[in-house]
Image (cartoon, rainbow, N blue to C red):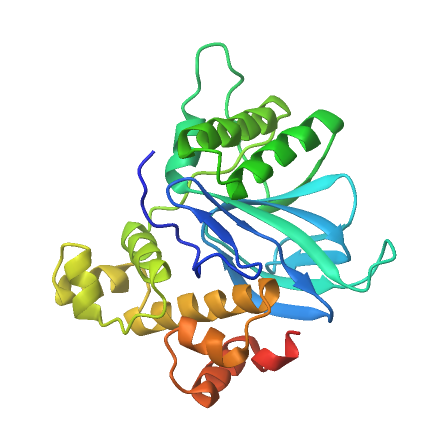
Length: 281
């Protein structure tokens, strides 16, 4: 498995920040004390979500799903955009808590290559759906999640744990759809997400992707994307993830997202999500 950049924006691991294992997965543990509504949240990679406390609601205009803490997982297909509502409470907790495990596209493709004698990879229905979490599957999930943050678990061993988890889902009739064909957008998102604090230009990004700025912009236009819009969205999703998972100050998060000015960062965040960063906590 190659160590390519994940499409999820990530900061260095500390203070509860998400764990990134390049080429394999991302692990995040959101924790919120207040209700949070997030419009048009993008899941760039296939993901599993387990709600530990509170309630999670997802909607995309066609499908809707509500999941509370309990023996269930939420499966989300790659490149899914949905409105999210995270509501604290339940089980004696005053917070919303969840675990998100996102799978790298290359790992997912390896899981789709069926070994001889394995059941076929199931076709997904809605872009997000709830699946029962039985005792065996719960142990498999825990084994994989524990391996992500364990320094003694090598990438090779973690790859086997993640593939085992995907196999366990397939045995129960659950699978992820393949990522859509917007290759340039996905490559650019992964590049920007690997260093959202960098002062990116389209020319620099094109050079890193082995194409001219004009070619990059033309290919993005064919996929109905703009460089500046994509960069801003990557940075804002990065900010939202850090606000949910760390105790970092807002100025520190602004810097991690490429903003020297806290006021400019806050205004951009408000334009994207409809509220200020300070209201997330």
